[in-house]
Length: 135
Image 1 (cartoon, rainbow, N blue to C red):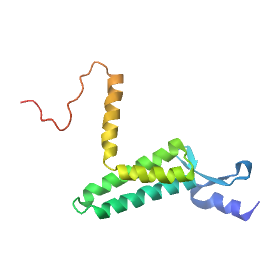
Image 2: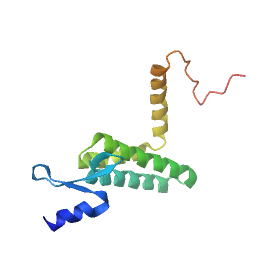
Image 3: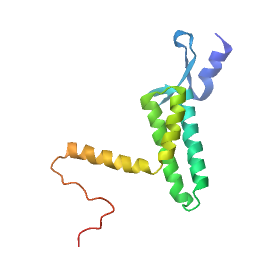
Image 4: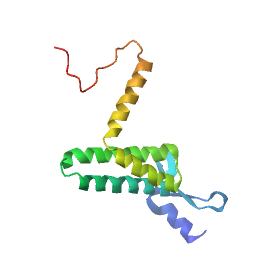
């Protein structure tokens, strides 16, 4: 047994796997495995992008930015778990998701409305949030 293989298995719950001579470190979360390098790259890209956007935005407060940052990081995390992108694709995906920011909520709202139309087809669509309620 190599010393490096034993140490990598001990680090942060990582599991060392070597398919076809290529060393890949897999991490797990709730039974789902994903590449450690891709996760680090994606979270790095998302976090740096959100920090740059936060520093450039002088008008919004931290209590508005922090939940959006956490949401973007969470979406990045689950994107990497679901799609298992290669290293560069993971980095670019993290940057892209970081730039979306609050737009993620609007995308999820539209996706949720479509899903509700499939699940409950007889339900009338909800009015857009920008329209005042009828008097």
